[in-house]
Length: 60
Image 1 (cartoon, helix red, strand yellow):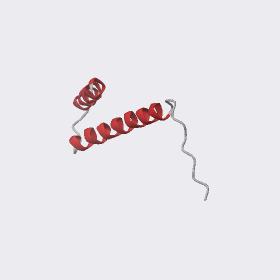
Image 2 (tube, one colour; image 1 turned 135 degrees about the vertical axis):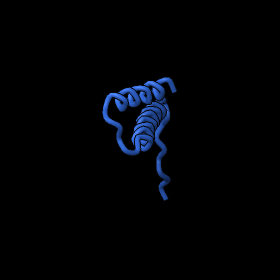
Image 3 (cartoon, helix red, strand yellow; image 1 turned 90 degrees about the horizontal axis):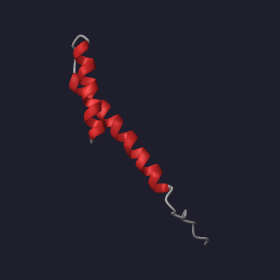
Image 4 (cartoon, rainbow, N blue to C red; image 1 turned 45 degrees about the vertical axis):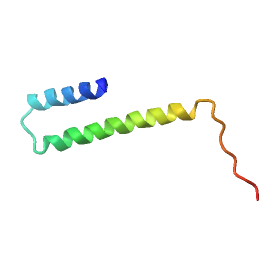
């Protein structure tokens, strides 16, 4: 959550230095979703590597 706040603060500082853009809230929201997606992918990768054996298909 701290990283999220840092990202949002950085985006806000960058936007205030530039000329105002249309639909800033959409840009921030999309960046937030990208951040969540990256965090989720990292967690899935970590979880899949923790001593779990791959499931084998049944022979039938």
